[in-house]
Amino acid sequence: MTITKNLHNIKQELPDQVLLVAVSKTKPVEDLQEAYTAGQRVFGENKVQELEQKWSILPKDIQWHMIGHLQTNKVKYIAPFVHLIHAVDSLKLLKTINKEAQKNNRTINCLLQFHIADEQTKFGLSLEEAQQLLTSSEYLQLENIKIVGVMGMATFTNDTTQVRNEFKTLKSIFQQLKNDIFVQQPDFKEISMGMSGDYAIAIEEGSTMVRVGSNIFGSRY
Ligand SMILES: *Cc1c(COP(=O)(O)O)cnc(C)c1O
Image (cartoon, rainbow, N blue to C red; front, side, top):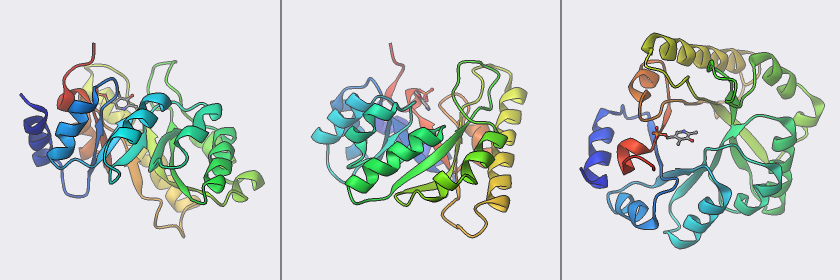
């Protein structure tokens, strides 16, 4: 299967309102170019240096999403161009993004990452932590960031019931934040969940954005 065919097949399965983020981490620029030629304009990367390098080479109408854990000292490298940062999980990181966005005279869209999986290692907030963050005076002063939704990763398991329940948890966190905190903010509408192995379930549970890598570009070695 070629990248073009893979993209075509996945696109056919996605409802219109679900955005496909093509996760191109570790893949060479030629692979991204093929996806671009096939019409793909939204790409996700998880390393700052790789993201910056691919951005500098590829066409400027691509929307670049930072999907991986982001260190505060690296925000400055992507602040001029990044379209959406998926994995924000602290006030400290938000403050840094705000500062770098301000320097670039722009607003940077962010998603709050939630810890929904069993695994200890995955990053993310709890609902309580998010509520605390979002009602803090420091957060309320940030004018150059906009939180447009939530993001989460399910446990890596064959147990589809568990995966489905974790996605349900993220959807319910989204709904509570929407009702309690973002009630006047229609831009808070994104739920980034679902990867190659579980995006079909994620869509059934309300995903608006799937992050698909290996099903498009082949497995990473
Ligand atoms: C790598 C990655 C993906 C894509 O994974 P695939 O299983 O290859 O589709 C999605 N989200 C995040 C955060 C990732 O790091």
